[in-house]
Amino acid sequence: MSATPLVSLVNSPIPKTSELIPPLLGASVAELTAWVQQQGQPAYRGKQLHEWIYQKGVRSLADISVFSKNWRAEVAAVPIGRSTLHYRSVAPDGTVKYLLQLADGLIVETVGIPSDKRLTVCVSTQVGCPMACDFCATGKGGYKRNLTRSEIVDQVLTVQEDFQQRVSHVVFMGMGEPLLNTENVLAALRSLNQDVGIGARSLTLSTVGIPSRIRQLAQHQLQVTLAVSLHAPNQALREKLIPSAKPYPLEDLLAECREYVEITGRRVSFEYVLLAGVNDLPEHALQLAKCLRGFQSHVNLIPYNPIQEVDYKRPSRDRIDAFVNVLKQQNTAVSVRYSRGLEADAACGQLRTSKSNG
Image (cartoon, rainbow, N blue to C red):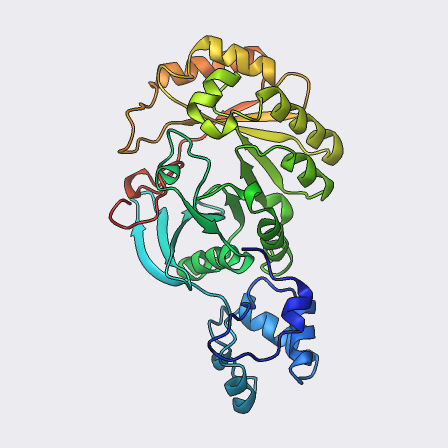
């Protein structure tokens, strides 16, 4: 499912209720202005509509009191594009996991992560995930479809409303592979930046790596942070952990990352889930440092968050510290990210699509 292009949104007459109607969420002020004019309304209504959607969080055109009752009745069938809260769970650390029901009944997960000075949202880009990473709960449930731009932006507005606090950061690290849904993800990034008002450098796009997609992404010259899920320092081990990596050699992935740095001037972050006895040995750290030598990069080490489906274990603190020390000795920038929301199954790699499994 692709993003609704401007011409489609603007030239859509008021359709019958039974027809598929593009949602308005994700549209820019220019798109909304063009749309209201096409419906016979004055141009200033577009700015009003934009404010009610993004600042006031309206869920129905019928609730926009500055519009006439007659016109609200005419456009009643046009959806804003908001989801329904299906389930909400709160971890002791304050992290909140949401299961959101989409218009077609499918469920997607998003996570709100509060801290002293920020509120981060971990958004999903697909229902399920086709990448089938062996240690990740999302991949165990299979893949259903891409999310639209409105369904991605909606996750951020949902968390913002629930916390009654402005979202400061968004990470595209939830369910799905963002670069298999590039059109909608780029449209959502634009909307989050320009419509919701989140700084570009506070947006992080994560990918396992899809051939040629990082190179294509670089051409957009975005100021967002690119995070590449590496998880292994050699091709053989990476194929074991990420079956979809077989046709995409590690050397080719790293070559694209180097090109990305050269084109954008932005460093690449590498996500590396530490699995006890699998990829956490000192020799793995040495191999990783060698892979990343010579270009701007940073390693985020993520101690494994257990799931029911597999027997991988989290390394001991000593093993984690030893891995960090090897990387530092090799002059590799590194930090350890201990995931939030473990008790609510809201941590990295734990997202699923059903309440019973979450």
